[in-house]
Image (cartoon, rainbow over all chains, first blue to last red; front, side, top):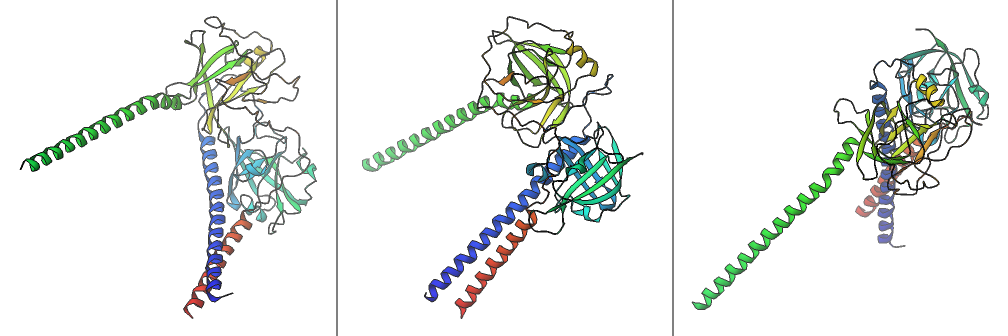
Length: 196
Length: 255
């Protein structure tokens, strides 16, 4: 191959790599931007005052639909704050934390299970400790929980979502936190409701 | 001289024609823009009041009322401060709208931007009409959610809610297609799958029923590892490798 051909190939390869890298980085920033917009809008929808003021009869609690805003999850010590949407599929988890369908709801009680990506919204969760305070902010108010225990389970161990005494909130994310690809385990945080 | 005069006259005439043509173009452009503005005006109004027409082929419930089969127009009340007041009109066979009710609602949000009007229903007992739950306008993530009082729900279940008949003879209802833009929120003791009862008018595209929330506990814990860090690393690596290769090529060229 002549020198000119080498130079041409080198330039073309360099440009292709730069272009490819720029496209991938652009895609990453777009994902982050979409998530940021969804979080902002969800937060706004949560603070919007309801149009009906002081309804006399109690309102009927409804099952949420995929993508509905459930609550804002806050862990003050870890400075973690993320919006929780209904659903736990990839599309939802890209935008925020997801409420696992079929588990408890803030308004209805039970074991509320919330999942999120270990490398985005639930990244600070690796530093969580027992007795940490977790708050769920909904349209109706703030519910507080205290971390009871932490466990590492297999993805098939769905009994962690079951209702049990002292288990009012369960956070789910992948484990190990530093792992390339689909992690083999799940990091589970159990919390119980506390007064105040 | 005569040649010059003739030539000048021809130039003047040509100039005059150009001015005429320009004026014609300006007039046509202005007319076109005005027509466009006129045509766009109703669309803007629709955007503001989110007017949507629905055809029901069986009774449905809205807060405080049961709508009999027919064509109904839902739109937001013209209020700057509160965008959650919904006015519901019945459209008679002459296409005239008569207000049926004004319902209070709360803002609702969905992550996926709807590409068409979405009306969701809440299932009730088999002998009670389905209740309209949420309404989303195309291209808007924010919609409204209707609120029902517990007592109202009990009443509707026993069919004692006031049932205002349509103001005129009900418009001929086209048979609903097998699927429509409607999603039903399942209740645990769902007795049977109710038929789909609402559709946009006119039916624009083959409609898709939204996936319902799965109320069963999943068989496996959700996958919570995103590809974001991998993509970010790959992008940065490619960018630096590309820059390196280009720099190397330039260096060789200089040699």
